[in-house]
Image (cartoon, rainbow, N blue to C red):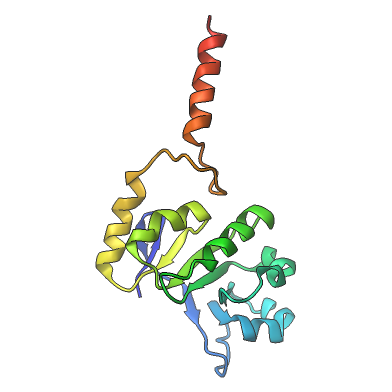
Length: 171
């Protein structure tokens, strides 16, 4: 599956390891939430980078004690109509201050890419190469937004206020 990061198709250094498979000796791995929660401290001592695949039905509060040691949190969109992962992403970014990679997995559709970016996602597993190419161009399409979110972009209102303040200061 293609991985899109920073507006381009990128190689994925993480290997998705099934629950019944032994972890490789080194390298970056992604494990399920169930496997992670069964023994987080042992997994966190893995010599490579660690990521967790977090279903949208689980509370992200359970991840809080480990966030500073997780390289990736992959949030799952089981269907395009299920938006709980948007809320999880915003909580991770805005409430818990998570700065690692926040990856969207599952039903990641090109129509929702911008919304996912705004919610705090910075990596996307897409089904088709054509979706990855479309995403790369979509990232550049919008530069101003009205709604504030955790992605750090200045809203249109704040830009206008800054401009008016600068104009009044120059008078």
